[in-house]
Image (cartoon, rainbow, N blue to C red; front, side, top):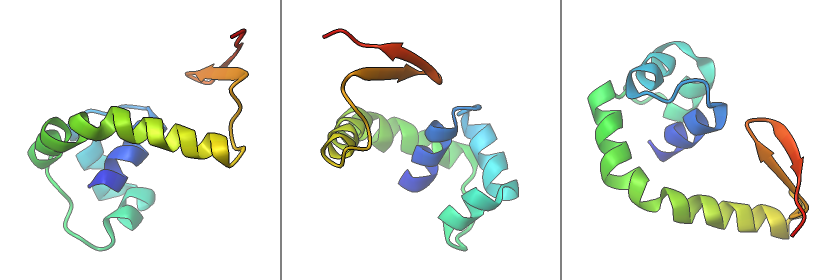
Length: 90
């Protein structure tokens, strides 16, 4: 479920639980992440987001950013917001 949520947030098209459920039924990328498991319904996705993902999302994404910095995949000199490149002057 965590893989599906992270992929949905990565796409940023529409992250409603109903849309994620629809994508799990139709999109090959979501099906791959499900690993032949049954498609979760929108209520299950919403419960997971509220009970588990919301609590760890900030810390998890912060750790992921730190890892990407250590691997030189991103730089501290630039920020990206919705695909817009903004120079940072810190």
